[in-house]
Image (cartoon, rainbow, N blue to C red; front, side, top):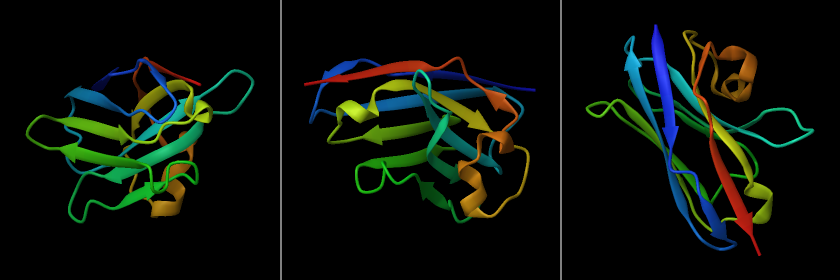
Length: 128
């Protein structure tokens, strides 16, 4: 069984940057899909970015993240990161990391139902 723990959420001004981390433990996540999702009140959980942690490191981004966010995975540290630049108020929300046991096409990796394990979330608040 895999456990996920997010960190790095904070309150920042618009235009600022943050890097979120997702530390994994338990079952290896070295050849699977992992992803970041954002949850805001009254809205469905939205896919922000995903990465295949095996060979090729396929990355997929949600429309709001393209050009501003970068997802990465460090095998040695067993940690997925999300670097967020040029933050906007619309980026506010609780960010969850998740991992899947499925092999899937990249476009399907933004679907939260494809993921079986989730962290507790970390809050990001962007103001101004």
